[in-house]
Length: 416
Image 1 (cartoon, rainbow, N blue to C red):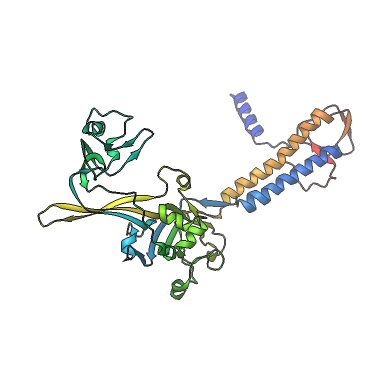
Image 2 (cartoon, helix red, strand yellow):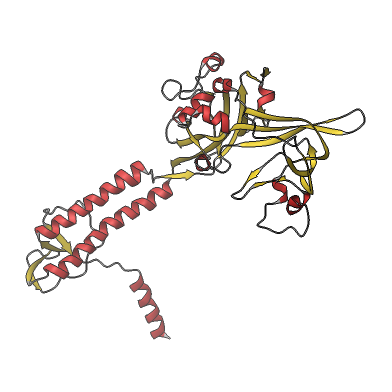
């Protein structure tokens, strides 16, 4: 029992002890220069890149919360009709995504009935839906026996009935059941060019929940008179919330006339990169512009952007009828992104430890180089006993953590 207590007490005392190692100086210009140069590079990397550029001493919040409100203003003339915001903006709620209609193809007074198809699908062999007899239309009739890869029946303006009917004095087409008369969507129309001078008002509010920090794209210096007169530009009015449509398209490196004819999708990006260690007025938005559907721009199949909608009415006898509209539009998507950083002790300590450890690893690497290439029967001088000269044939273990302010020459390298 006494012996056990003695062993336990001995283990405890051995555990709470501290050991030091004696440092050995290697008088080698080559190893010393390698050691100091690599240490200098590591210190420069951590100070210049990690701490100053990447701000590794900060904790960052990337979960940005954002709300966007938009308004479009301007008047245009289309088909001798004055168009206002209610006519050409959809959806009307003023959210982060909205469309400005530039061109319309309208089919009026459609009713549920039977009528000849007006679309011709050009294939390598013939024009589909053009017929001489009903036998030619049976292929497109709506039937569970319909097999692909024959053209889908719903690629027409309605459900094919399988009958061949008169379209005009010189041609017959397959009959359909649906909203008649069928839409003729290949008519050539001119876009509303006044859209280029319309203005878009963007109100953006953001919040970084980690820091409970809120900000908007209205700077404190902005006044009502300034908003009435300013237009955003990249040089003089970088924080104006009013954007001219033509300028936005030009900043996205697109041609307005082409977009007005075919439609397209434009992205308005608002970036919030905030350093909360600085003054509040240093956290400001930055704007950039791009075309989001750039891939479809070069595609011959379904280029641009268009969609359909209908306005429904009722006749006196109760029959429903509608006006079908195919709209070509420029769609704007307001995209908000950002992150905020603020000083925090935890990431600061973690990166400082990583820096010191990296500097210490250099000593280990230099020791490995010495042991592998330069280890010879040389005299090493022990700092524990400077008067003694100990002859060693190989290098010993390497000091991982080495204080940089030791008073030694640049050619000296310490090992254990």
